[in-house]
Amino acid sequence: MTDAADHSGCFLCPRGCGAKREAGQKGRCHADSRLMVARAALHMWEEPCISGEEGSGAVFFSGCALGCVYCQNREISRGRAGTAITTGRLAEIFLELQEQQANNINLVTAGHYAPQTAEALREAKRRGLKIPVVWNSSGYERVETLRMLEGLVDVYLPDFKYMDRELARRLSSADDYPETAWEAVREMVRQQPAPEFDGRGIMKKGVIVRHLLLPGHVREAKEIIRRLHETYADQIYLSIMNQYTPMEAVKEDRLLGRRVTKREYERVLDYALEIGVEQGFFQEGETARESFIPAFDGSGVSK
Image (cartoon, rainbow, N blue to C red; front, side):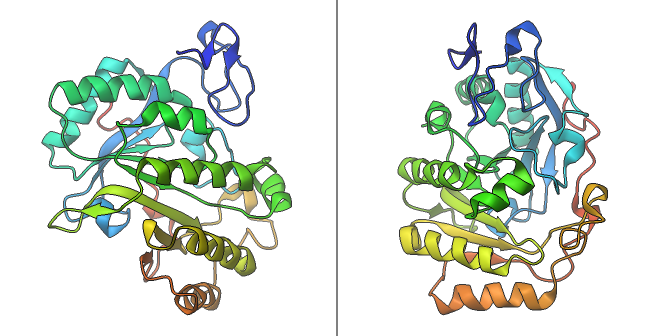
């Protein structure tokens, strides 16, 4: 699987769990060496410059190194859904999505499969893949792993979930998330320092940093937006999201068991405008619905 995940165990992600995935052992990401994909289809619910009118070619990978308690994709993030495929089949999937007029290839939570994904991208590009490649992640990534993707990924679409270490520990068992995500975003901007768009407004190159507002955490959201804006200004786009949906695992939690209020979201948007954020996206209407979570039914995965 490359030197990061071979005889000495897997160290692709910041967990550094050392799982011997080639021997069938699953890591903290809930994945062994098999390349597991749960869905590959056109996806309409990303930012306008990603989905456009035709849709984003979203490939949802099984497993996740972060494992947030409020995860909206638990079925795949915990490795409960997915089909094992080869890197050759993954390359074919990319080309099939291009044939379906996808605006891009959108790799959703692929970090723990970075070597196989890089191999599949190289093969697909040799065979005619020309649309942009989007790396859609939690932001919890090692810089060394991101460097495997240099020259292969055109658009980075990371989350930035927490600045508070205690909050990161409590909700994602990752008190190192703030500094880890900060370094990951820095590497992403190094690779793609200037946003570029085509004539239809689809992003060809660049970095969009997402923040999902959690109920009761307006102050945390403001701090994340402030620091990102002060550091990167117009080098990145910010996407401020209100689509948090309480799932069964957190229904009894005082804060996580409810949706974000309209007032909470307005306070965050007002703050972003006050500090001068101009390159950004926000969500309108009712987005906190489970119907926005796609069916992880293997669509588009098998031939």
